[in-house]
Image 1: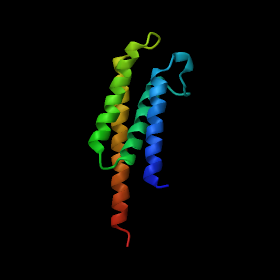
Image 2 (image 1 turned 60 degrees about the horizontal axis):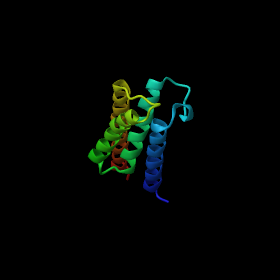
Image 3 (image 1 turned 135 degrees about the vertical axis):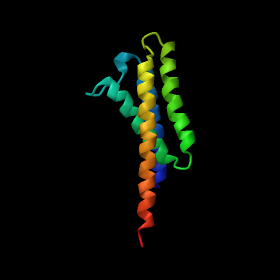
Image 4 (image 1 turned 90 degrees about the horizontal axis):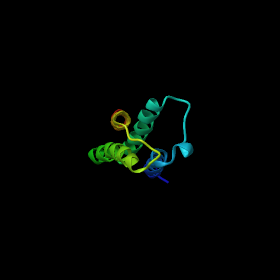
Length: 119
């Protein structure tokens, strides 16, 4: 299997996990031993980086998808009685997603730059 294929699987699996963690009842929600604010940022940063690396020629589509899903998942919490949507949570997810896409672009840039100097 190619590296790109594995990145694509990881990106979509990560997206499924984030959707589940965002929409499931609080008692079923996976938690990590870090602050929830940092958890939001980290989850979407990883998601943004994975999608950016999986789809390197579609950065604007990746950015729209990651940032849009951050906002949409927060709005969907308004439809569930046991979850609550907060503007701060949405902002943290958007910042994390943007940082992840930026990190993915940096990784791609340095990977490409490294190949320039190889003989």
